[in-house]
Image (cartoon, rainbow, N blue to C red):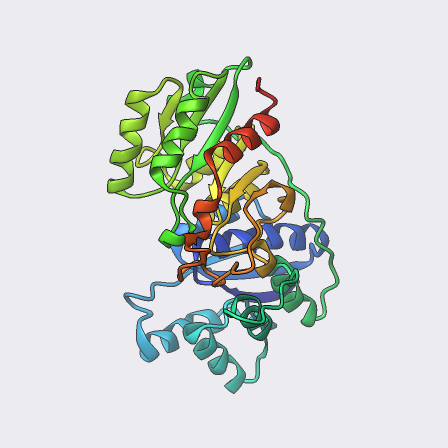
Length: 341
């Protein structure tokens, strides 16, 4: 059995996309063992994928700095991999790749298409076209190592067992909508005031709403929604990552930003509507198996301003995500869940 070392340390959505790719890779290349190197928090993304060994990186502890990365290299070299697939191409993964190259290992790294993305996001003379999907960029690294496989880009729906405390909340006569209203960068977030309007308009429908993601501050805001509106349940801080994935697999639909919520929905095989502002699906980060038709966005010549949403995107003086209206979001959800208009 051939053995590949695969590295992708962050971010959450990217690691979830790697999991989608490796699931299909292992279905088609069953004689390959993968040593996956990422942060321990992400381990549930890879549950159920055969022939994967998980090796955690602790970049703030024993694997910190050059000395720590060399320690990680020695840990990984003990697996005796045949080759290394660097799906990250950042300072840490590049350093690790150099160590392996110096010891004669075959290493292949992702081509992130930085020049194309720069042309897509620059302020003037943008070249607006669909770039290669990030999932295909991950797959290309494995193909460059000699493996032939194709990505279907289809959702695989497999309902997992719900946490015990939620089993009574799920009934056959209701539709279940997940909402992941937060993102790392503010320019990717549909304002909480408008999201509350969406929830208010949907809460009296035959629809159970479950809110995902965020820390203590976000938890308090969502708790206020769940106390104010019927059929709204706050999952924040109540479940671990594995349990959240199991819950998402039982949803009829997810609503998210261009964020990890969309990618978790793909892993769980659940259709996701996504709201886009400063970023754009053209950059290649649409979640695996999701449809561009389910992207809620308003096209404007200024969009996108960045690949990751860390820069403002003013469209005639209005932030790009603020062009998306409450009506647009509510109507899209009603169409997707087939509840009354």
